[in-house]
Image (cartoon, rainbow, N blue to C red):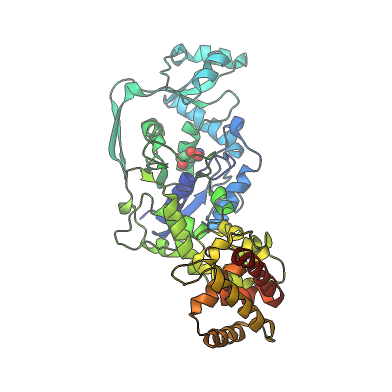
Length: 480
Ligand code: GLU
């Protein structure tokens, strides 16, 4: 059996689109689940679209998500170079060979004409150049006349291919355009380079977006002209925002880096997007990459476009955060604390409160802001029907709490708890009648991560007593 070999072949556009990342993951999994090889190839032949630093973005993304490639630009391999702009002479040789094989022809039409037709716009190119004699061609070469190489398409008949997701796809050859394969600058178009490279790199499974479905018959004509084996095709439906709308970089939901910057975990993103278009055949929703390497199979791939539900991703990310050890959560949260917290607050204790209550890390500064500075809250917050608190009892219980707490010497959770428990029983009131006003005074919020005891411990004695004073003043204004 032939070794399974897949490739991720991104164009360096400057960011990693969520859909492309999913393609990369499926390619990786198809190879790894069958003991095969996964490789990275940079498709940068469209120099006009080249973006500085874009290759680094690709390498970094694959590294962060753990998609280790066996061959690629920075790790090398037997079929290199793995950057298309460094393979120029290879394409030229194959283009000449294809002309010999009658699968293509040299086209000497004006640059303007060729440039306008080398785009993806499907224009039927019925050019006189395909009937030039050998003599005319060599004359043109002698005069250094610029040329492109165009694919020669038989205008009768149909071409059919089988796609693992879409099934049999048939097109009329007359629908196919005679597109440019090699441009006048000697660089190939995607339409040529992908075929040459997939063949030379011995790719067995080509996985890519469904936008390539309609041009795949053209690629097969090239494989056939060369007498090469046609790979398995797996075209993937797009990931959509809604039934009509695509994900959009501008709206912040198309780029992997944007999600990382918002505090999503790479593992959660990978897990979520794998399930957009692939069904494991069970109800299990949580998969690590290692687990997927074992259980992934192309049978679960679907051809219906998947809807990207950011709330579901958020939920899943929250689950991933909860499954971390406290240490790991704390070290991920630290940079977010530093935005708002002073050094005197024990971050581990904050993490213990937040871990259960955080879905994405970027929510953290907002959630802990109150620890840094007490919000200017409305004293109506002290009044709580269920807790049986009003202005009057809140005021007197806060005063009592202040008195009791100010004599506490060892400021830790156990002592604070004991101290307040004694106070509550001495006062003969309900727990909530002391703890609700206290929590309100310490947080200034309607709801806070952690109750009165945890907040008091976190804030320390001085700040706790200061905040109680603020509450007392607010209430005194109401009661007078
Ligand atoms: N460079 C192409 C893209 O980024 C890759 C298509 C393919 O995988 O063949 O869309």
